[in-house]
Image (cartoon, rainbow, N blue to C red; front, side, top):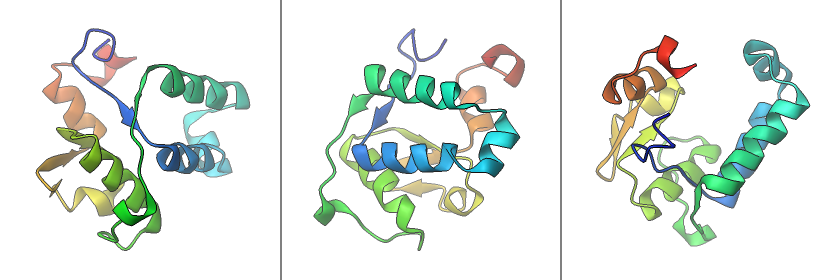
Length: 121
């Protein structure tokens, strides 16, 4: 796994975690990905235990995309000095980069890591 062997360094902020929990609880997301409550708790624990925590204060939030939820994500990657931001949101992907941070799709990320969708499962 790319995360386990050091190819990826996940970062998260409390604001990002709140948005993630909210999104994973949406019925349409749960249906699309087959997520049960136990899966959401597992994802939360995984990030809580292994992702680097980045503190984002309210004055660090900037309105870049027009989507208020993106403020936490973009501030987190900026403060955490990420190389990539992996997102599936088509609106955010149109930015292509933010403050030198490349914005890529999950499929592009797998390609950069030399994996494909079958390898990642």
